[in-house]
Length: 92
Image 1 (cartoon, rainbow, N blue to C red):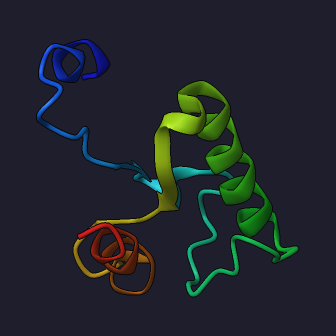
Image 2: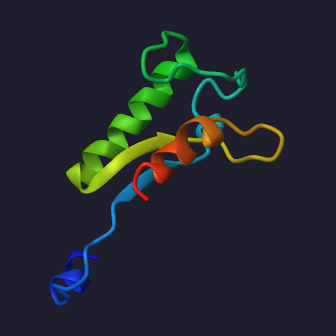
């Protein structure tokens, strides 16, 4: 993306929101009882979600404008309405 936009100075590179999906599969797998306070919670699943988001943050770096963990599985969604949608809307 950087290379493509570098050749088009009249265009601005859009912000990137990194979506960390399938957090329901993080350990402990048997525990899926949203909601989760992934930013400050102390339950094992909350800590693993936070650690996973941090690992993605380290890999992607400062280029992403935000990092949002979600579960998009039908009937078991988490953090789409309360986390992902506001993160995307904030950059419109």
